[in-house]
Length: 165
Image 1 (tube, rainbow, N blue to C red):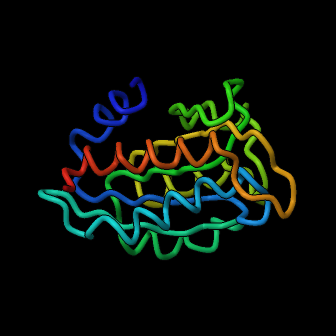
Image 2: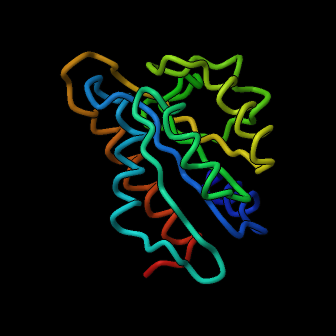
């Protein structure tokens, strides 16, 4: 499980972790970032061992929660979004902030690279992007089986990393 190993490594020194779920709940698999964030928000407490963890829901306009994220002042910011990463549907991988401009993220209005640059500049936190390959972005559709499986897997990874039983 390369994602879990890479995420653990990136979060080893994290003290205050913000997670931002991005996507449209009206467009099939594009909902994955928001749905993962909602699940984590209700299932993971704000205090987790030595870390503080807070979830933000960005939907299709993640720039609208930048003020709240800045107030939280995270040491690490994790963005989760559907992205065309050239993998099979439901597969996820870490995307470096520098790489974000070359990847097609699905439906939000502001390019993710601009959002990342702004938050890095204004907060000075480390940014981690998790891209999940969608199967379908059709309007009015539910997330695919592959995305539902990926969501369960990613939620489990966070529960393990944050040491939640």
